[in-house]
Image 1 (cartoon, rainbow, N blue to C red):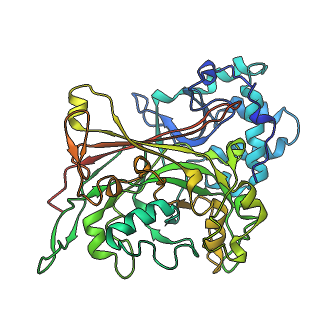
Image 2 (tube, rainbow, N blue to C red; image 1 turned 90 degrees about the vertical axis):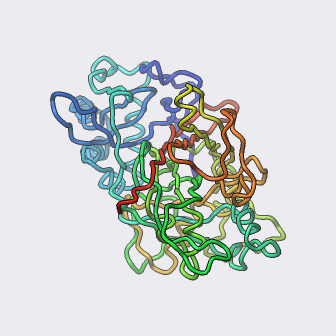
Image 3 (cartoon, helix red, strand yellow; image 1 turned 135 degrees about the vertical axis):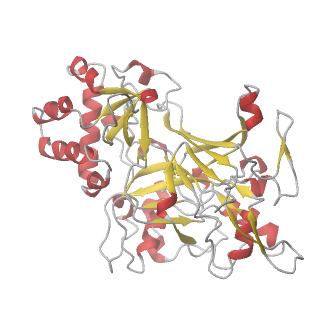
Length: 449
């Protein structure tokens, strides 16, 4: 899992100077993929197409200069050209369906042409678009979305609120728990949505009523984009699972906790979660994350995975040390020009189930995954109180208010709140790899629905 190659060399520098800053999210060692177009101007709307982030710029993968350079290059010319043609489409689905060899070939080619000693620098300046001048969309046509529950710290913390004597349900340590979410309400960072309305049943009330949620929450998650799929009726083995994964993004699975508490039994989340899901615009490839692999471990006293979820590769390097943060910006903070406040931090390395295990379990019954499908990791909380990935945990189920530097308090989200997630990998001797950010704003409820 995660072989390191020349594209990861910490000594590499780019002719795009903003990519060489120590705090850059998108150095030449990263090269994440997204779908963009220039912001609308007097010339009308451009078509969306694939791009790669490099510093504060986007390399336009539909640029003819890039395809011309690829066609005149060295093998694998065919694979790179085919990949560039696929990336010229308004979604990355065709590119993802080409498979791992094509992904790696294009990444290697882009690394070469973006290096500081590249003879193509002058020619490719015309293929750059400032990120500040671009608008983004969801990078794939997401056919299906599955959200998992892979953080044992989150599951235990939330379970303790409702089942103090037995926080974890009996199946949690044996099976990766998940539910089928709604792909049509997934949007890219910058999403604004009205506070959802639904049925609420307060404790002790004689009957439920319909109202805007009073307990709107965020969930700090990692999104997992499927590359190549599997045929209906087939399984993806644990050893092959990551060959089917293109890369990762940041994901906010917004949740209406009071609606959820009333509706989730016996079939799980429904209207409490399908009104909005927000993802970051850039997909960081698994290949880019190879230097930040870590052993995946399971406490020796816990049940060990069943054979289809157990393997030496996962044990040795199944985890990825992605550092995660949640920030909150209220309407008052914006009005008073105050900076957002960090609420918590955690790491994806603490996930109870690995990416490969999620994919293998998802297909063990013959379920067919397809290129562009999205998996959510579930809320990524750590063992410490400051590592909670949701307000449900930070406020102890709404019983303890958080006091912000602005003087405001929160148990759950208020109208006008902007929630920001950030993620990155860093380690001594390696170049920092960032995910950018995912942000969304809560609007007042639409009571005319």
